[in-house]
Length: 407
Ligand SMILES: Cc1cc2nc3c(=O)[nH]c(=O)nc-3n(C[C@H](O)[C@H](O)[C@H](O)COP(=O)(O)O)c2cc1C
Image 1 (cartoon, rainbow, N blue to C red):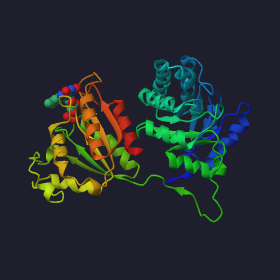
Image 2 (image 1 turned 135 degrees about the horizontal axis):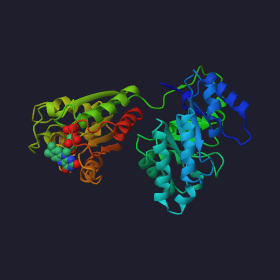
Image 3 (image 1 turned 135 degrees about the vertical axis):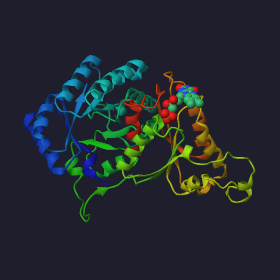
């Protein structure tokens, strides 16, 4: 269970703020147990000193508030902040360039900051300044940010046009995979607004009013807040190699999921005896019961008790392994109206370095899950993984863990 305080990046970015103000911000963050303080890079060393020995993190803004500095300046500011103790970087996207359609330049700018931050183990939040963007531009910005390696997309600087809105947060949540989190910031001053943002999909709230937001209302005892219920997850690993790349990707996902309190039920399909569907149509006449009695009967009940299904499969000739395809075909007997599974995930390593290789498999995954009515919750592929162990250090492992954690 995450307390409301742990959503808060306690923020002070006003130009007139001085050292004493930042010291006060840090002591409040410690007292109230906020997730982090969010400060201008100049003040990262001050915050580092004040927060010594506490678990409050430091987020530094970069390219703030206009986003129009050179990429080199943003990278320099990122490195400076990380070297002095920042674990999160809130960078402002070049939203003027995005509005003119210079997507490659926007991508390159975000990627340079993400790469620099990653070298120091820091996460990047990309501030989109949603008040200045159309819905279409917000969607594009989200996709570019995720592709460039951002951990978060964030609504606003608080210094530009408009602040966070429920609509923008919902749209951002829909436009990134669950591996990417959403931060709502700008104009959030009370508990009601903060909770509305969280309900809309925000994982973090940036606010200078954290103390006010977390005040316990009259008549309520405390504000533990649990927007995301723990989930049961059915994981089908379709690789015949028990210690291969798919297993590593699956393990990373499960680690994240379990850390977040979810339950995983992992099946190594290659170790099971599942016969291919024979199209006998027995299930059509017998309320979804399958005529073939084999290990598929261990998997099927989970479709009626679990919330999410994960297909983990290496790419075999542009598609799933035969093990996964066999299980899929046997799902023809599913009674979709009674199923509890509502969302699905695809995890897939492959040998080639050509990133178009998994496309036919992804098309097939989307077609099938769309047909059954499952919402796609994330697709993580890992190129260049031919031999077992090749996936070590691949960014897909981090993405899979984050996907599990953020479900
Ligand atoms: C039958 C077969 C077909 C394969 N087809 C492809 C392919 O079309 N494209 C590709 O990039 N890799 C292909 N591979 C390589 C696997 O995707 C790669 O080795 C993967 O990392 C195996 O995952 P694992 O270690 O979990 O078994 C193929 C491997 C096998 C055995």
